[in-house]
Image 1 (cartoon, one colour):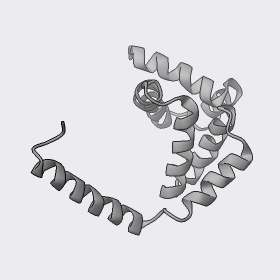
Image 2 (tube, helix red, strand yellow; image 1 turned 30 degrees about the vertical axis):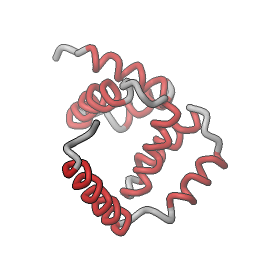
Image 3 (cartoon, rainbow, N blue to C red; image 1 turned 60 degrees about the vertical axis):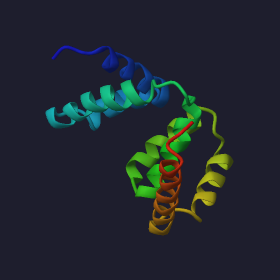
Image 4 (cartoon, rainbow, N blue to C red; image 1 turned 30 degrees about the horizontal axis):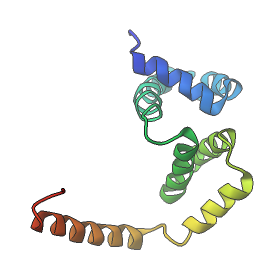
Length: 133
């Protein structure tokens, strides 16, 4: 299989975020069979190559987003990885703990429902005004 530019960029950013030793260890344990190798190819290109290299947010901010979303969705194995990434990007243990404590008041169905109600109202206002200026 030929490798795309996004795949190559993704492998580089993954090593930057996680570290060479962890990537090497994961390749020998988690991604050491054909099925998981396919998954690694996909995430290397689509997640790391496309999402992590997008402009607009720095890597530090992106890692905090991952920590919060992992917590919100109960993605515990990924949380372990993303906490490491966040620390590598400069978040302190105390900052990460405080972010998680703060998030505790907002995670769950009520938050999603409220966001959808607000979005419905905002979209209706925009459409009533003829769109965005």
